[in-house]
Image (cartoon, rainbow, N blue to C red; front, side, top):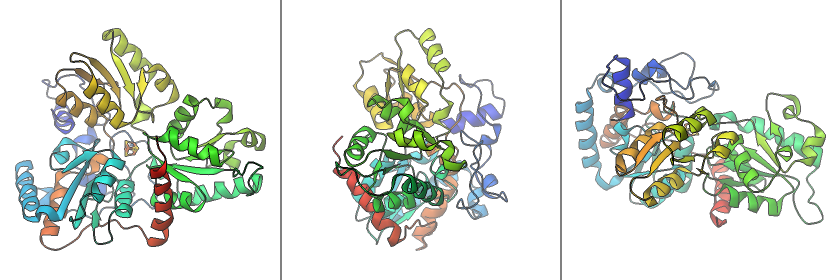
Length: 427
Ligand code: SF4
């Protein structure tokens, strides 16, 4: 049963729903256009609903009524017909965390980086419909050809974590760090600070890293990227995800006291000059609200109920959760670990519910469940509904490109420098 179906049944009070039997918000059962129409931008129901969307968050215009009122079978028929008509001229990409009702139409399913690469491998496609979130569509635009149009079916599908670091506050932080450390390298030729941005960030921040000797990382290669940065710098400024930065640096032997947090809402980031001077990694005060939900208590419960369970969590989880798990790794790592396991294995997984449920369906020879028993998907992925997909695809059939995501050349150029530095790093 898909996450969306389970949520619908729970919200209708159906008792035949297997555990888990509660959701993080009953508003999940509403259609996303109900939230797109609100006067102020918000992430909508789901794991990020407590986060504040910045006023500049992209807004989605009203979806035409015919798509809002169409039944699921009608949308299915229209999407398949449009896809058939468009043939090779369109490629649909679906993120691991996307709902099943949308992922079923994807030509490729993967993590953000795999999908951006998939886009480059389909040079004949004139349109790339990205069923993920905004920063992923930006990356696909930067890595695809100028003739290809990257389309995000719902512009309100952002990422609350990516929004926690914006170019103005990172630039302000950088100015203060430059004031403190200067910009001259030390006797070993190492720069005072190397900026490292997680793939889950705006193109502007990737461009910032490209311009300031920095680099991009993913959750698969974060350790190799930090090695690269330490060879070139005395310390690293890591944004936006504090947890990925902390978990990775800690595993590399960096003491916690050398990893101060920079909170952009506080003077000097809420830290002090001496702490910054002693630092090896300055962590940005950002987090993913999906992965923040996992707790050590959930791991303890899984181990009590399923002796021998293998607990794998994503490195965006808080440090105590990563420390308590058996393993931590990217979505791709999790998938490969399950794929390679002996039949009859039991896994408790700490990542987004749509991906965990799909893995459970794909690998029936194993017992696979989400550590968090509450159905609470990524709010922003959830904003993409088959209605939006039908709308953009039928637009393409009629020769109209809706919701195109483009990154300006002056941002894309340095951002590609930072991405290419990452590609040159061997994990
Ligand atoms: S799961 Fe977290 S990091 Fe990924 S898109 Fe959703 S909010 Fe952003």
